[in-house]
Length: 464
Ligand code: FCB
Image (cartoon, rainbow, N blue to C red; front, side, top):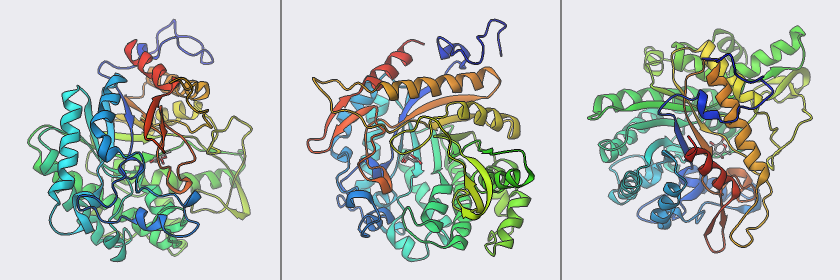
């Protein structure tokens, strides 16, 4: 609720905590392929990312996740570091090709044992595990059999989810099925920028449906198998995009871009049907959604939390010659904004987090939200004397936390915030260049150094 004394919108609240609900969860996030390394150990077999990294030119610098942050071998020290930040929760993902090499058949006990130890280490230090089952590392044999465009992959995913649940379900409460299915589908199968590097829009649309189906199947089975209460959800990359003008053409460009980026995922998950206008657009483009009877019931079953990954938003205009509408938008152009940019070239737009959370609260009421990723890559200096001054990241995080708090003040039900990322890591097609960490990683020595942003985050959390 908004208090009469609340400061003007332009003035940041002195402390965001006043507007956040009790029990608000502060955390840090990572994902398996980006930090674990040990790519060929303990029975792990290649994922689509191991394969993609070997394609000449696919990843900057020819980088790959073979070693990454060597987290697989340094997990106890890393967990001690996480606990030392004072966070409530740690969001990590489980590597499917470690737990079920090849994506079919029995689980590998060694892979599961790693996550079993990780969960125990976290709980032993008072940090809640938030498990993501799929953060992009599809076992390569499943891609060879058709990947996410093939319906069977959804069923394979649900089986794998059960293996993880069997091992961790007695201690893990928070389960996220997928991370950013739009990226898996459109960057992976339409734009070819991410693994598996295909450029086939029809495959991306089919992948979308089967990712969502896999989510729904996994949620049903998680609930059936639960012996302790669990919170099940999914994490989407979302942005409250804008139109360049009020003209019907620009507004239609926004409708189409927003349709594929946001509503194509939100509507089936939270309203139980695909958005009609997007269904029509896709059918007209010759890339229909391969929906079968009962699928939408499976996909649209209630979830306990919607994970929101927020980085920035785009401003869209109609332009017959362009194709920039989020991987699926001929006739759409993004209009460059004159704002600060991160090392990824992404615009810094904290106001977009406020408007996104409020939009979700308005258009999809009743679903608790958590910001499961937010953060920035900047060209950090090297650590000197054990210190790294990353003022820009501190300002970025502060401004976004405050932007989130403003949305809460105005009624958005946000239950948690996870900084991306705990530490510098393998940034997918951009390789090891961009550094998103609160903790600096020297890849030659694997030495970790807390940046000023980590100290700031710890201080803010301690201050509640
Ligand atoms: C998100 C991904 C995450 C990380 C950040 C920067 O799209 O989920 O793994 O790469 O972007």
